[in-house]
Length: 430
Image (tube, rainbow, N blue to C red; front, side):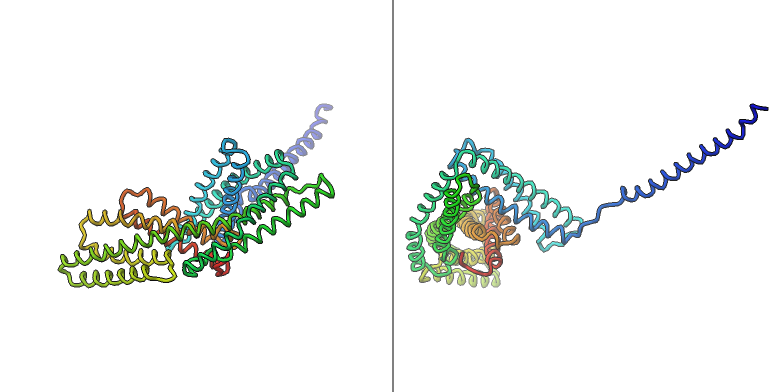
């Protein structure tokens, strides 16, 4: 009987245990239900417009970082030698390759072919990834050389070096001013407009550099351990900017001289093509085709006459006009040319077309470099596309296709220059 007296207690204990197990099970199930939606919930989807906007911002930051690193590399080579800077150079090469891919994707986003939202999303994310990696690559190298420069160069020595750079730059100002005046008398105002005012801008840059090193020197005189690295670096940047502006004036002089030679060659080629057109049109029976050849020949002859007699000369504009008129005549003569004749003509025209593209790319690149803070992604994208088209044209085995590519490059570079000037407020001066 005493043994059976324990049964009620055991039953109560078992019921309590079962209740606890059931309660814990319910609590776990409810917890899982609360947590599961949090775990399984997809992150908020970023709008395509926001992705594209972020990609545009990153493209500009990446492009500026690469251009800054390119300038920094030249000074690093001068200071430490090419052997110590090959990793820096390799990093810039890799970054430029990634930048080219990013700008190519940007061009595809901006072209006239509509893309699906998914494709826009994928390309924008790829642009962000490429821009971030390229920016990080050159930034890491730039910072490494900044640290090395701080370790190997004391502040007073840096100040003396910048002071010498400023003095060297200022010594070039009278020559640059005189060169600009001479160019203004030798060429049309529109031809010299891209570099007008750059001597004054260079002088301002040297003034900024002088002010910065003066502040740094004053700080060091008051307290020799005062950190002035940022002021020294800013002064170096201002001095480099002034020198770069003066370099662009010299490049414009050389570019215009080369353009005069190219213009004269293009005029001679135009006259020869007009003669050839007169010969070929006599072999064609189609009256409409003959009329088109006559009209195109007359137009090219007029452009060649204007280019040869324009005073003051504007060789770059004349070269563009000759190229356009030549291209139109080429199209009309296509029906009268054999395949081999077309190839020979394309090879002959290709040299001039490449020079034109190089000139426009160089001018657009100089303008963007001088006004980075004001120029957006559209101009930079067009410039990258122009550089890509010219590179492909140089690799193209078919001279006709190469000629088309070189002409596309020139058009894209012209568009890049126009967009850059629009972004900078429409000013032709820098």
